[in-house]
Amino acid sequence: MRGLVDKLKPIFALSGRASRLDYWRTQARLALATALVLTLTVLATQAGGWLGAVPCLLFLPVLAAGIAVAVRRLHDRGKTAWWMLIFAAGPYALSGMARLAYEDGATAAVLIGLVMALAAMGLSLWAWIELGFLRGALGENRYGAEPARR
Image (cartoon, rainbow, N blue to C red; front, top):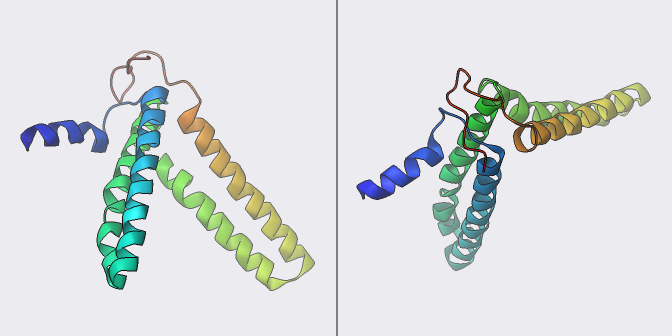
């Protein structure tokens, strides 16, 4: 059991840095885990209705691992973990405000809603580029040593 804990510990660590390769490898593994959990949830729901909530709880560690690797990737870029709040909540907040503007129906409100929706897409794209494609800081930074660039 101790060996398993030692292997899982780096996956959920919020400290340190993650290279682009580590980030994408983790994202691929999390995508497979999400597909597995979704399949288990659907099968359990079909088998027993409310039983679908049981495997659905497995989404929590998958979500935690995704947040952890994104935080470590931000650290590699020299940014604080607070950027995750902007990258995660920002698009949802902008999309919600856009939806409210659309519901108003006035031409000006619809245009404002369109601008907000485009800003939400832009922020999501920026997060994707920032986390997945831009090179990390060279050398050691305040979050630790440079990760191995394989």
